[in-house]
Length: 364
Image (cartoon, rainbow, N blue to C red; front, side):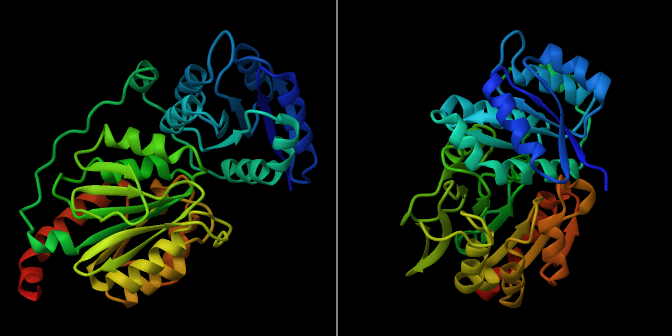
């Protein structure tokens, strides 16, 4: 089997050497070149034509975001960003994911050598995933907007007033690789009186707060990081904090968020399995499940439990996924009621809520 050929782009010689060492220790990949800045990287990519590049966010001469935007327009290829565990690093990394980077690794602010070696498995796993990801070319307009604030979503027709039904229904979303943009696509198309949305996106600590704030500026619903014990309200979306599990519980007539530490589930914390299991147990037929792009099978069994409990579930189709792993596993478990392209999930969900509104009112 041919090895995955990787080019490392970073202005730090130490980081370049460490990443090359980590990559070259793997039997299925090889670091075929390193570059100190995007101009050297551009020539290397032309000459070597690698399978994947790792790209530092902040570099001299041209920052990683500008380079990524041009790369994804002219020569789209799998990119894994190497960012810093800072608020600025989180914001720039989210922009990189918006521009088409497959995933990111957050390098520590201190102890770079030991920190990167401890992340060796994560780094190489993400390179493997990136090498198999579906990469799409960016339109030129996206490059022009690379440094600008995200545009507001186009308005959509509101749902009819659902009254008590709106407070009963809950939407549950699970996502991993490629999921930051997929989740955004769903949320920006939900009207302000949407049922509450509860989300587990595989993300490390320090990034979910910036992610929630970014979505909050784009969406008609309010978006925030979930807080333990808070009431879950219609017209709001709640994102699992990085490094903590999120679930829902019932408190009288209300749903509340439970944010807890604990062991990883399916190698993940937060885990979609934890969230979807609580959906099946607590919300039952009032739950709507959505499984978006991601590697692995986290949440598949619990999504089947949701369907068995009466939930209605949507899975993203293969053609629109960056990585089809999680939706494929959910489909194979018999968890999906519908398999749809990403852009059809929110419209179909709204259509279903409208169509079943009268029936739901009679059952309440």
